[in-house]
Image (cartoon, rainbow, N blue to C red; front, side, top):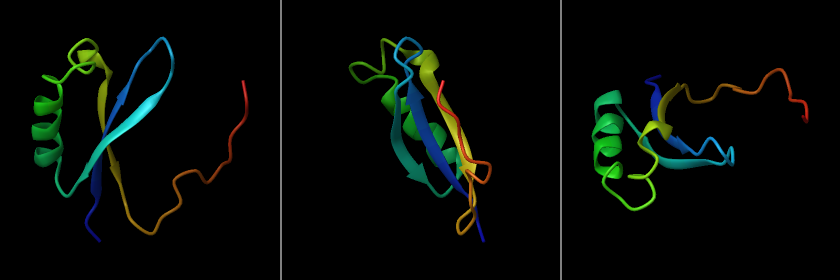
Length: 68
């Protein structure tokens, strides 16, 4: 199955993460990042973008989590 590419944006001070979009290719996610960098808020935090690759039908938090 083909992977999906998730464009995320986070702000270091708050730790909040926003899902900007989910795309069928890395190229489409990169194009969306370029567009988003021009938008209010995102333009002020241009280093907050990441693109994550995910496979469908697979657990991605298989080890649980802890609270800090």
